[in-house]
Length: 215
Image (tube, rainbow, N blue to C red; front, side, top):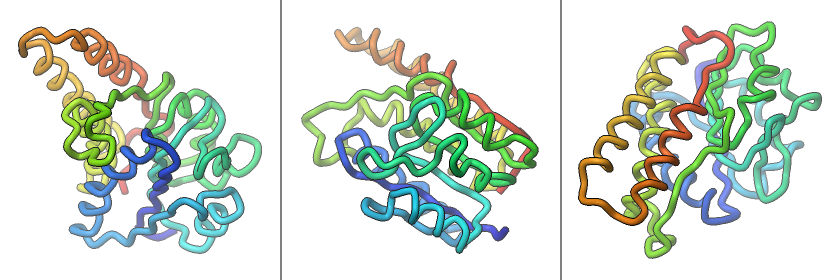
């Protein structure tokens, strides 16, 4: 296994478009640190191609963006690319961040079984809200930023050399900072929903496996 980043970048709906846009900050940080990076886009995000890429490159760090379930992560549209009982053994000894709903419930456990690797993900749906005004320019969406910048802290912290546990803590500190920021601003109709969503991500974000693992 060699030092490198594999990152999935689906763009099949508004949610995955936003995740892909925000992943630019992650790949930029990897580039600054001289970490080899393989971006997987759209039609490559199917089970066959994903397995081929993992085996060929054998990079130690994998970031998933996309829809998920308790035992799987999707790539392009409804294509499953990682699933319990199918190919989770390929994740053994790797460090994984899955920005996917519920994937840490079962998949995260199975990916780190008998492994020195770590899986950071969510036992609840990963929540973020969008302002439709900025659907074509996600980086201008200050509502989405409240959710996606803290989640970006996980892979960015790992790239900077922090452990899985330290990266999880760093992200959660950013979530709490944003909650406090929202609560200090003049009341808006959406404030309760934003705070609830951020708190959901705080509570649902967990580390499976070796929390001292580093990239």
